[in-house]
Amino acid sequence: MSADNRRAPYAGPSKKLIISIDVGTTFTATSFCLLQPGNVPKFEEILRWPKQATPDAKVPSVLYYDNDGKARAFGAETEDEVGFFVPAPSKEWKLLLRPAHLPIIKDLVLPPLPPNIQVDQIFTDHLSYIKDQVKAYITSTYGSGGDIWDILSPTMYVILTTPNGWEGSQQNRMRQAAIKAGLVDEEGGRRVKFVTEAEAAVLYAADSGSVNDWLVEDGHLILCDCGGGTVDITGYKINAVKPALKLEESSASRCYLAGAVFVTQAAKAFFKERLSGTEWDDEDILQKIVYNFDRNAKKKFAEGDTVCYVQLDGHKTVPNLGITRGRLKITGEEMESFFKAPLEQIKEGLEIAFENGGRLADSHQKVILVGGLASSPYMYSKLVAWGKEYGISVSRPDGPTVKAVANGALAWHLDASVGSRVTKCHYGISVVTTFDPANPEHREREREKKLGVNGVLELAGEWSGIVAKNQKIKVADELSQSFIANKLANTTNFEHSCRIYAYRRLTPPTFIRFPGKQTLVPGFDLICTVSADLQKCFRATPTKIGWSGKYKEFDVCLALGETEITARLRWLENNIPVYGPATVAYD
Image (cartoon, rainbow, N blue to C red; front, side, top):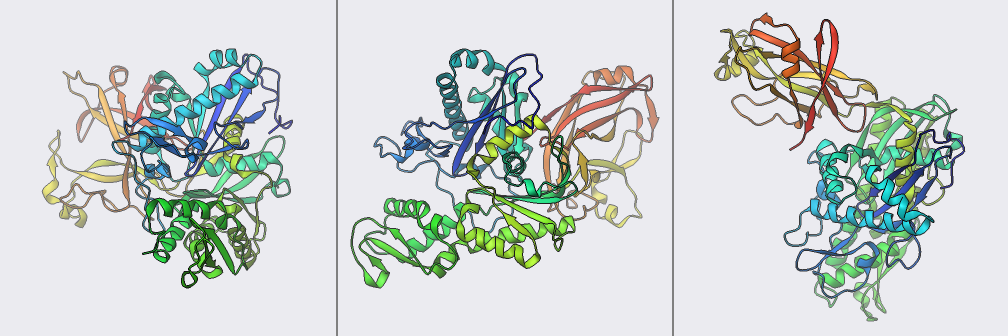
């Protein structure tokens, strides 16, 4: 993408380097921006990858390991036949990072990982490969590229994209992989930022100019990113177009495991059944058949096609199986069955997005489709037909959408276009409450009551909400929860921690666990633990006396409007708010 004249020249005092990496389930794309004082920012894609037949902005998210567990081939290199690698490539491994709560359209069957290799190691090796290629590209493209990399890479920002459903735990694992890959050092971990693929994609669509007619102040957009593994759907309201694009989420972002790999899996199951007991009934041969299907029939199939073909090994004809000169015949109905489950899940997700925004029948609503699965003629025509049922415009931006997310991630970092987001779940904490024998729920937990420090009977585990589901939060907003810490004269340990939970269903129950058990009630998940040193707070704030005895009061402040949860402490010194650091940790 050339320099965008809608952006102001970079006003910083010195050069900076920003890299965005979109690691997809099937392909990876990478872009970078060299910020130079006085120049309009320009986004550049990595267009040269080792062993590519023709330059391309995308490279397969595939690795091969040798028998000693060392990564030996990456990306396009893995499409060559190399003898010393283990039999199965590491692919679709990104989905192993998925949160357990994600809705899934059917049983997920992923290729096995190499022996003794974990997904975090694969992510690290893949990011290390990406870093080496970015370095090589910059070094060879710019006249002083070597100096640029040596000087700017130690302080560069790295923007990683994630599906909508990925949360703090997944982001933390990705950050650790980036550190181990050498993209940043341990102290520079905060320079790894995260943006959702849907948000990056909508910013790319706006940047590319392909949806200019839809960018109308007070208008609404639904972005549907149909990727290799996940489908991300988010609604946006357009608050301003000029001088800069300003958006806010109008419906909570949603993520579905319904991407292109599920079409492939359905086709593979079909091939396995159809070819059972034949000479093609072999796992290695089946993988090649699936590869041929992905490259041809899957991409070309369009609504109305009555037959497609996939290439098998050899030139044999078996009429009763529909095989002619080594080509397997697939009827239009069979092809449609491969797409059925993802298509139904996408339509359901779009309807939920519209209903949450209250505008399913609003003719001003628009849907932007991006991602590899959206480029399928069949999938696109079906979604356009779905839109016509509701009077909704459905469109794909022109141009290669594979680089949409990588370039959009740079736009996200530079422009801060999205000013508010909608919470996907309830966030809160577990608190202690006074035991009330007249309360039926308390009586169910009577065996759990304990005597507090001030002689009062207490129950632990009551839900205390910090923010409700589907609530709009501005990016700069902080949400706080007050805490007390009992003051003991001989206190030497000032560490304090609290667990942050999410409730994903409609209305949270009173308690987060079942009576007499440590099991969380369905719908609750532990999100993270916020920890801090209260020494300064204890020394500066007055001691109060309450039903629990002597205590100190302070607030834990959470920022949930960004794509990452951040936290800090707040207390009063002479009635003036004072802030202290806090850390957010994940299991």
